Length: 229
Image (cartoon, rainbow, N blue to C red; front, side, top):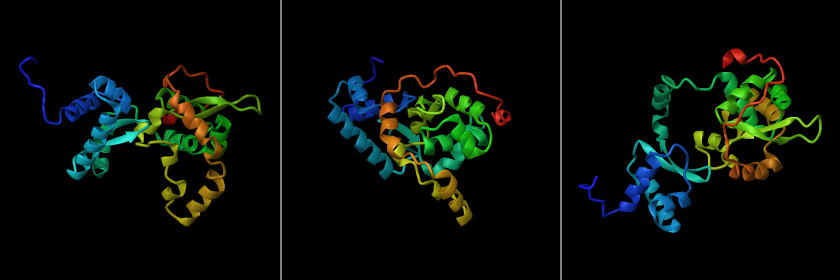
């Protein structure tokens, strides 16, 4: 390494790129500044410039600010090809049951297991346990009524995987409806309890989250979706 000269022009940007390439999670600008030995404001400006340069050059990857930090992502234009490639070797991909359960939790959090069951129509305890093992959901509290039931919400890892800055960036559920009948179903059954007033509390709690993959408790009962995981 002694024979390699440090880049003089744009050296901070090059260093930031190197740091981001070896980071599995989104990294706050302040943390990158400490690693680079630079001022936070200087790093924030360099990150914004890098993001704009990638976009202008139409690169196959993007630099985006998500979940309170910065992370490199593949370009959305190549989503299908990248998804097919990743799913060919990703053994931890989500089943249909897991995707449905995750959507219910994301849009209705904080929500109990019984609340998820009521919306999906089947016992989802085992699926919730699997999502917790993957670090996508976690217990965020206890319901004050009805026996202190566990309340579930999404994690910072969920935001990172889906490229969201915060829960406010979740697209409206009706955007996914293929027809008016489906949109009516969403309005009547799924949108009855929105993120609403608990959003700020949930997001504040996400900021303090430190352990996404804690031990999972025993499911409350048999799981009709166990075969899907």
